[in-house]
Image 1 (cartoon, helix red, strand yellow):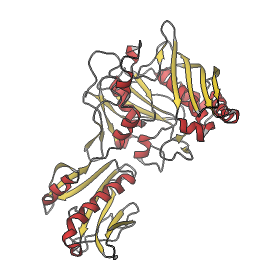
Image 2: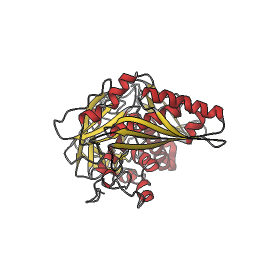
Image 3: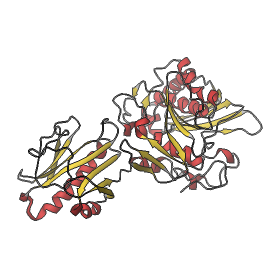
Image 4: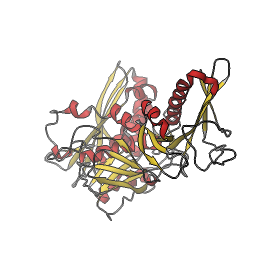
Length: 447
């Protein structure tokens, strides 16, 4: 048996476990039939006979928001004793297809008699649904996109770094740290070796970018940077330096010195130094604070990194970048953290963790570039992206060409939750992202 998919879908009837809303009694067709984003998966036997099918489609007014629903699960009599296996395969395939399509929430309206069937496949029952001729249950497939990203990038940090940090208790989990006895702030970052090997100019640019953003998140004015380069030969190192030079000029972060080693695999680390009389911590938020996202929506996906790295910075002037990078220092919010490779949701989780809080985000409040799905935008590195937490009515970040808008609040519950247009709330992260704990010590972060 194989599964085939196509779009758009024709109307289909028959026995169903997932029921569509707004169906015509005569044809069983609805507004999703023929829609551009609707997908139909069909189970086909080795001889070409159609055994069954299932439909999936976006819900709500914004097909890129990530809210999808499955419906029209059909298994024909031709499947015989294999009907259960065919239905299971179709549902499993629909889950994969939904996630591939960018689903962050995947629902089904299952008839009460089929709830156990879905639960055995890993679905979770949410609540009973009223107002239908036959009793239905709202079922939800657990999409783990945010948790998987946080686990792969950040979750090992707490146990790994336990006992290592000698100072800076109030800056645990921050982007940098104030240098004791001075008004200086230091921050360091390393670039993925694979990027240094295959895209050395971009790696050099990103080395300066992330370091400048780490300083910016603490409200620091840039002073300079040190770089550590590893390269196979001088030609490779020269390409890395080319990116570093461009980034140093664009982000107003001159390279003061560093170290270079040739004859080794590609590597790059950049340490930045800034000046701040009042550094802004990531862990300064409090329950009830408004969480804002400030991001530059211009640009596009970096070639070779579609869905992972958004390039808004290489097309900006030095003055435009300076306005963005100086915004936190001017506004002085309670807490700030630049959006890292953990994405908007993972970074919100880190800010909340450092503040001893959790957070709830409004999915419809997150502004994103045209044509970009919410799933990609909330999990990518967005070029310039800054999360801040501050009291109600506090001055918003004025970051030039970047757009700033409230997207949720810190609260006393654990993890990160997402609120959808219908009022339902799903869990994106169940608990702390890093395990490093609350920045100021005292009470442990919520679990």
